[in-house]
Length: 215
Ligand code: DX5
Ligand code: ZN
Image (cartoon, rainbow, N blue to C red; front, side):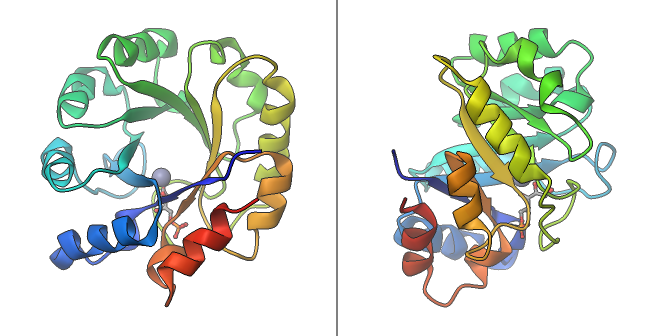
């Protein structure tokens, strides 16, 4: 089995020193960088948009794992793709025509993903599993870093792993993930994990990433 991709989320980073914070992620050995885009409407918080991602892209070689917490994001997809996103993950609950949204992302030449909130079932994403590169299971209510992990999300990871068959999608999980729950997520079949506060509060980020990613 392959190692788990660790995707540090910059929501917990110090935005005054964002360049240095991202350099820490690169030095830690984490292969992905998780970028939380919040619109103040789908979630009760606002973060940043394509300009910030494009500036990050110029100085960062990591896989940019962009999580769009945005209602009806279609009119923004081109801007986020041109900013240098490697994967755009949209929320199932935020898109009226999810298939069209996913196809638009694919037509922009990058990967696409679907995220589901804690109350949404895995059965709701099944019709799209042939199209997506990633399913992002939320293990907190989206909107803020530093929340408590919801254990019911482990069953969703397991269900997605059991349902996969020959399909290629990666199972990613986001919210409250740390060394205290990583083992159960690995066992359930997670391919990638988002780590915000647990990464930035860690005193040895290299060791943290090694322990989080090793099977
Ligand atoms: C929540 C975000 C997460 C969050 C992760 O809406 O999608 O990516 O910032 O932070 P932690 O790991 O602290 O829960
Ligand atoms: Zn996220």
